[in-house]
Amino acid sequence: MKSSSKAVVIVATSAFVLSQAYLASLVHALRPNIVVLQLTFSPHRYWEILDEWGEAGRALYRGHFSADFIHIGVFSLFGYLIARHGGLFDPGERAAASRFAVLLPVAGLFDLGENLLQFALLSGPVGADSVAIPLSALCSTVKWTLVGLFSWITARRVLKRLGLYSR
Image (cartoon, rainbow, N blue to C red; front, side):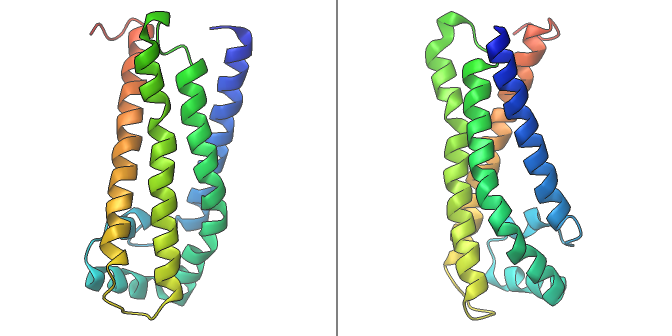
């Protein structure tokens, strides 16, 4: 890996880690946690969780969106830069690297959809039996699946580079 690529990876990783840590610090007190809400397809359970959070929890949740919209750009760019400059792919694997490079940006688009649906739900009537709830959960499911796939591929590639994985 060239030193310029190493610098890009270090900066992108640092920005991602700081952004993720900041988001976690904003919503860490929510119980059930934010991921449970994100993956809730049932309108009844969705409103039940928001009720459990109380007004203070709902305010925390609403307040996290400004940082989360920025985080979408941060993690999308992070994924692209890791794929292109992280040394995870050999020169002959250009097509695989290109497919890998879009995983987090596509996850970011689903995260954006999820956030917009959540924001609309929080702005609308409380307790509404809205199709936006399962649509938001579907967006979140796709987002987390793509993030998991990105993480799994990255871990395998790093372990391979370190000689700890042979496939």
